[in-house]
Image 1 (cartoon, rainbow, N blue to C red):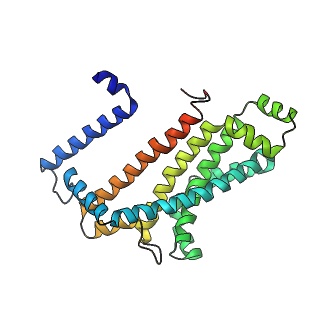
Image 2: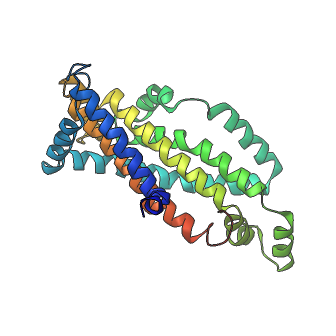
Image 3: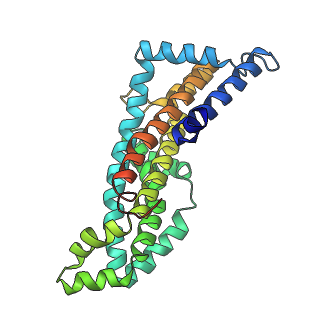
Length: 262
């Protein structure tokens, strides 16, 4: 029975996380490191529940998620448009590949001074950094996926009289869906890094209470290390929930159902 439970991938992840947390708690209680530097997991959970009960941590988590969702939505639209241009015109494909080679390695946080000059300390600056952080990696995944579609699929679609837009939506998108999901996962992860990094540099956007990055910064400033770890736990929890409840569900309903992955 135990072996059957451990074979399930979710059970394996839960067991792994429990082992890590037990080790964490044992190290903290051994007092090898000062509590100020390495708080116990129980202290972190206390800070987490305190932040949730006061709704302070929940509001900051939602604020960061709101920015990420907005940035991902705009980024997805831009990437789909650029991908369409790239697969439609050879010149655009060369231009986009050059832009990816130049801009993808450039950290989004390096453009923060430019964003602040253009948009000030505002939500627009954060969205700008998110867009830069996600567009080029997603565009690379999308274009790679579209280029991997077998030529015979496109020939069949053209024989049925499908135009370029219909070929994109009805044939190329479903056929390259594993690459698209992979690109979205990368974009999601990079968006988190961008929003947390930006908020930790200039704090809360003008007229807002700030997000998790701002919470991490203020917790560190007041030497609330347990609160800092609580914010990190919130980020990890949201990431796991999105992976298991959204991305895995999409993959199960699409690429696995279609027999495109095992």
